[in-house]
Length: 440
Image (cartoon, rainbow, N blue to C red; front, side, top):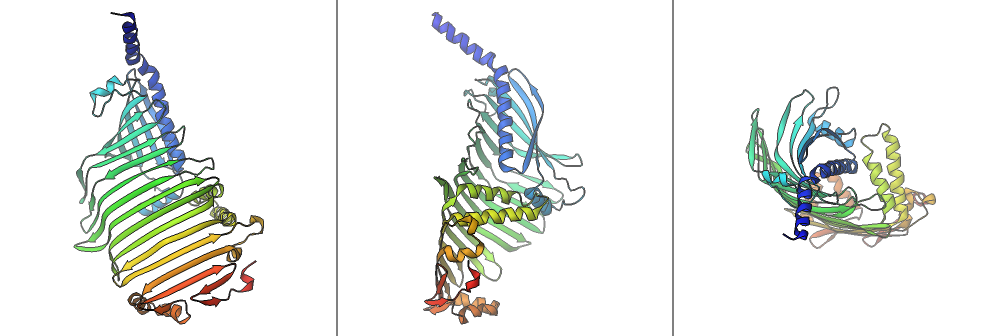
């Protein structure tokens, strides 16, 4: 046997037999980095690592994930009725077995094992623990791979099944979700499909036909993440007894954002088809929206201020910060365009198009009333006559919009065409005076 071949075999043996002890530590650190990065990005959760037992070829560990004090925790407590004393929320516990080594040989003894090079390959199960010490296993398994660069690819697999407890029955279809994160670059991507879900409480049934989604995001130097996302939801319904009390036949969302120098451009399209709206029946909603030239640094600061609204001990100070940042965002100038904003009901389709352009102004000399002098806007609305008549019947005060000339009859629809420029407002060809004291 040639010496070169012997050297290769020896190196391969070292990779297989010696690397796991070294790489296991790197894989453990990388997984903690990814979990902690995810927690920091959301700001709403706390991740603690405990009970890590490192072996030569494989290790086992446990992570506990719980909600921090803040808006999300308050909302969940309100929805679940766990506010006040003794209102501790359950903790999510993730138990992980990590097969490490540049070539994770030990992973081949389990499902989805692989000899692909990396820092490690892991399988995780989840459990929820309640404040009284009781707990319950969460169905499904997370298969993860830590790449050589520290990126973490996780794949949540859930087979179709059902569960019954105290007269309530939950059934679900097959689910497959993939998430890739890199704590060093801050980049993340995700995709998945969630099968049909039904929760039957006896007198009430909530069901979802299915959900698919994908997207990605990357950080910017301004502390704001940009990227793209798409989502499709099928057949959401709520039934009480044999009667449907609401639901949605479908919903699709496509959105993206990107940096343009120091500004952010974004766009979004939303389409929703409702089953039965009370007093209206079947309906649909369609939105096509664009944002251009929004100051990225101010937008990031405004986002952080909004994130602090729920968890602050001084909400008035947070609201003041939100208002200040919003004011500076408008002073920096940007454009906002609703290319389509339509609502379709059995009586017809209400269409609207709106464009707003805010000129840049000195923030030191800018107030909310200044918007009237710095805004250029056009608003075009068309409402079917049958829909207007129904609205007036339901709410007689709506007739004031017709009497005052904001809605005028053209053919079989009522329309409004409005324009604003440098403090001058024109509606349906008629100038509308703005009080001089309202601007500065």
